[in-house]
Length: 113
Image (cartoon, rainbow, N blue to C red):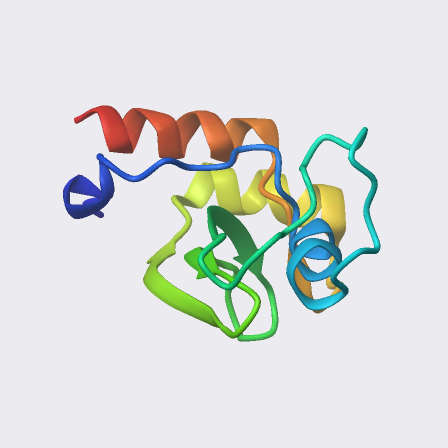
């Protein structure tokens, strides 16, 4: 896996998929005192990671979202140990999830290389 093309992106490590929907698709649904300031224009965007479990194996996706679209920038399989750890925590649930701290640490290390 290589994230070298994305090392200069500003990643919002604290933005979960659910918060991204609230922030960008439900304008005005979050407060100015929240962790993420309300979206004010179509030029506002965030880059964040999520874990997608809809397929046969969980994958990590790098997403860029604004109020018009969520664009997948990259997709990567999880290393075996991280995948097993994730599946132990979430079981067979299908959906999109915020990466666990071990996955975030792995992604940060990949971005630093």
